[in-house]
View 1 (tube, rainbow, N blue to C red):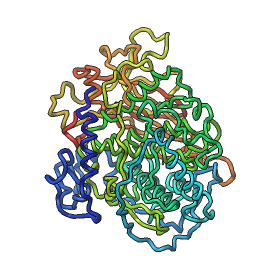
View 2 (cartoon, rainbow, N blue to C red):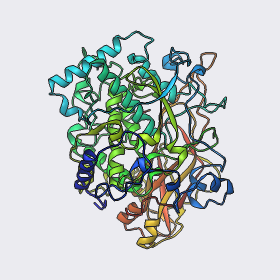
View 3 (cartoon, helix red, strand yellow):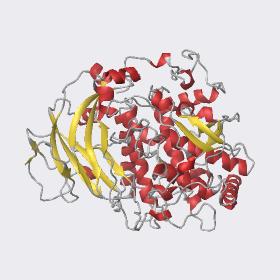
View 4 (tube, rainbow, N blue to C red):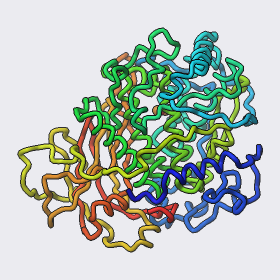
Length: 592
Ligand code: C2O
């Protein structure tokens, strides 16, 4: 295991955060030097003038063009863009949500006053693992009572359980267009908005639950799926008479201790429990390790106001997160509730799952010395609207949620087994899938024509690397990234493909797909047309970016000129437009 930092680091850093005095208002001064040993870049110390560094660009740079690798690759067309702003709530329209008859708009009109959010001044609330709160009767009674009260609120109350769930549908299933556009949906997935938006969503949900039971210390639990004991469906959601229960789940998975499969694609993994646990831990380890030096690989690509032509690229954390959605939701129909974004938040486990996703971001941030992930005002100033714990409609900016301490919560420290030493090479899944494929095979370059992936015949292409045998310093400055572009999901069904990397023998590929590098997942996005039949396929293309510098080191592939890249379609229907390898500027040189 060659992650540069270990769990004691996390402990030290988080302990640090716990004890630091947090100012309530955003401040201007630089806090370098007064913070803890590892924290170097306090969120609130970011000011416009400090946002210039060799890696950073402002809008003028973007207009001037000539943006080498950094934004030329990540930001799509070089246009004058702006932070994402909240939609006009009075203009909610039908969503892509057939399971809800396309309706998930809020009952309120949009004439409410919008205020700045008054951040809580409570003592730090500690979120705990779901499998450990199970036996805390007092906590469980409170949690259930809070959710019960939320369910009993008048149907049109903004805090009502189903109104809270509909928020997710509105922002994920195209119920709003961005302001000043009539066709660019507000979308909180597939980009750098994903983690901050969900952080706020959970925060307000948690604060409202606390308010309903008059407990300022209340926290939602996290589904600790990154550890062995937390890898089954959390038992606290199982009891049929509990307000936390949801009947719309895959019954094979939510009982009898089935192990969550973080690469789930609607086929059961036949590996033994211990093998599956190891594969999950490895997937998490790789996700962190491969994306530690560049935030967009972990968190997703930029998205800017009004830009509709960009290719959406989610980070690998979102990919991991999707599997749990699929695994919990029903296997058929609309995959309710968890397996479809429009209904996902109708299952209480949604918030528990996202609580762990949020925690993964916090760990990632700690591992990178708490630096701001994107020094870019289009990210930092992106603004969301929520009803807060005082029933007030408030606006909040991404820059104010980067450190959970500002929201006054933290996570209980638990062991991080995936950060330890586990053997993650040559898992059984990477061995050849076909017994007839015994010998070396000629594989060609991708070429220029888009290709449809075929589940029974993986796409294998040979891809040239921009540079081999790079020095340590070069690797610290630029990370090698495998890019798959123009990914088109051609039906409304959930789609997934996995990506493997191997070293060729000359121009020949061996039977072994090599090492797992990452995945593309898109949950189903169905839309009922006016005539009641379903419209076909999302229009937007996506891309996938996978950091491979540490992977190639682990594979001892430093001196390979070319790589064999194998795309294995796991579910759904997908075409891809190209596979290439690029060098992208890192944002954290310290980690490789
Ligand atoms: Cu908004 Cu787990 O998705």
